[in-house]
Image 1: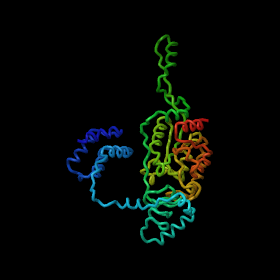
Image 2: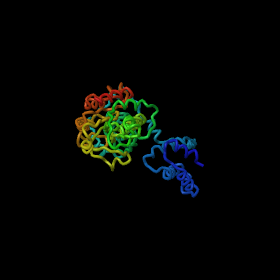
Image 3: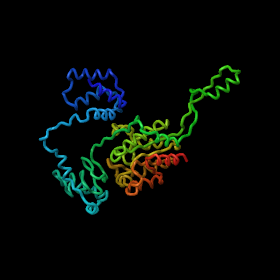
Image 4: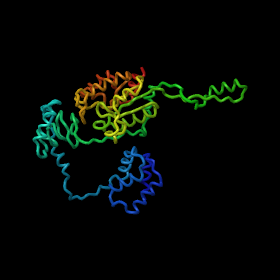
Length: 389
């Protein structure tokens, strides 16, 4: 029973044991949960997963094993309201979209405050009130060149602020690469040295010492040869970066194995006054950006990884951050990073041919001194050569 499920988890590189599987079976035999797939999910995760870092792997393996189990449904069930709402959303032509007004950041905030005082009920598909669909700059799922998303899913990724509790996932450090090309590209940034304790056999020195010792074995040891390069990587996570999770995880895995002196932090869209290392605890475990700037030596190689796709206000406007009111503009923090770490680059997973069409990417490129490279094999090789100069 559940043997195939157990091996699916093992195949996903989740460290589960027979003892934990027996614990799960015992809990099922004692009817600790109702006959519900949702309750079984939480019971299985509780008994089989020992480290929350493996939750994402467990979710993927669980979904793979139980795929299609809920395929049976009542053919006479009512059509979900969300489907009807999505169907009501207006498909505008390019000419109609061009006619929509951009309020500007200050006017947008002022108008929102007015609507919060006036609006008393829910609205859908309109052009004025806070609602879903339509062309209003307030709400979600609609079409507007510059708005504020409040609840629900986005429509065209043009929101300058988002009002909702957002959760992100950590990038998987142990993701297996389908190719070694990323590692090969990263190896262009290497500077080897032997430091520390003598833990490695020095074969050439041992042979010479033994020969000089009339053939009596004279073993010589040496410190391990390591890459001395120090790397600080700052990863954009969540939002539009969800489209690039697979490639970013591959980069994260490759960089972790190639750079032994590597540190990383997360940010969202643009760097501001704090960073974090665990996305589940990003609201409680924050690292002040000033501390990060002061902690690492100036010869550290700085690598930003992000699509640089956001509202320009998030970069140039104080208070423009999409989730909270930042006291200083993101551009000021990027400038501090590039001044503190002269060897710095930005890796962008978006295709290079799209960069010219996004204003925020152009701004970030200028702030980085045009040191932005595509997250491709050729782009990585160019980026590593830039850092190695």
